[in-house]
Each structure stands twice: as structure tokens, then as C-alpha cells.
Image (cartoon, rainbow, N blue to C red; front, side, top):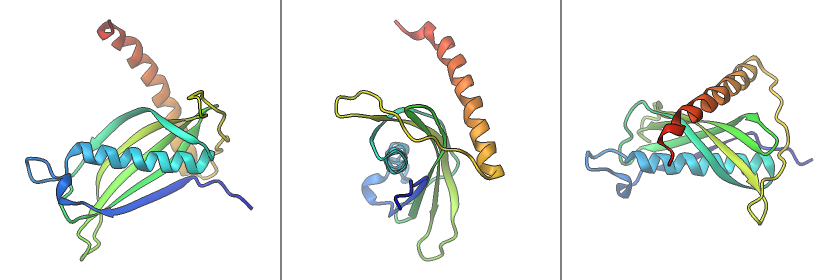
Length: 158
């Protein structure tokens, strides 16, 4: 049986090269980790190579310190015909205590593509639990909001 993987958690230690001038892990490093986890999740669900189409709503809640054990949790919360909405949460802790705290969360939209970069169909994800249904409905609301924001942002396009 070949079951699709809906979620994934990446774990690693925050390294000295990840630090910004303030001595904490750089936001760009966190965004890279989020993108890696989103790709792994989307590829696991779709069985295809995937590219990032959108990353938004990123909220940095708490800093990450060098040497922290970092967990980036990603899960599919909505599928379109070729896209997957991935909810991500980043947690960190001192590896000696293992007391986790949320540091970042966001939504990333990944699109499955073929070798020519053309979008490909992805399997439909159907929410089952109440939490799944709530997240699915929220993903739909966010799509509508992004469309409105995109229309408003046209003023800045040249």
C-alpha cells in the first residue's frame, strides 16, 4: 500500500552561521527552513516535484537561539487542482530541556510541476476531523483575502 504523506516534521540544530547581528537566528534562515519543509510535505503528498507559489502570513512569535533544537512541522490543509496549501509551525527548545515553544507560523502554497515547469494535477485532500475541516475552511477564506489583496496591490505593479 502506497499511502500519501500529509505531514512532515524536520528537526535540526540551529547553527552559528544562522545568526543575525542581534545574536538570534536570522529570519531568512527560518524562512528557508519553512520552504524546505513545505517542499518535503508537498512532494510527499503529490508524489511530484513542487515549487513555491506563495508564502504569506508569516508571524515571528519568539526568537530562536543558536544551539536550539528546531522543529518545522508542515501539513497539507487544502488542495486545489495543482496546488497544495501547507500550514507550517516552527518550534524550538534547548535540547537539554526539550521544553518547546512556538517561534514562527505561516502558510505556503506549493504547486506540482513536470520537467518542463508546467503545473500538474495533485491528489485531492479531504478533511476528516473537525480540526481539519476548520483549517480547510480557513484556507479557503485566506484564498479569497489574497485575491482581494492582489487586486489592491496592482497599484504598485508597473
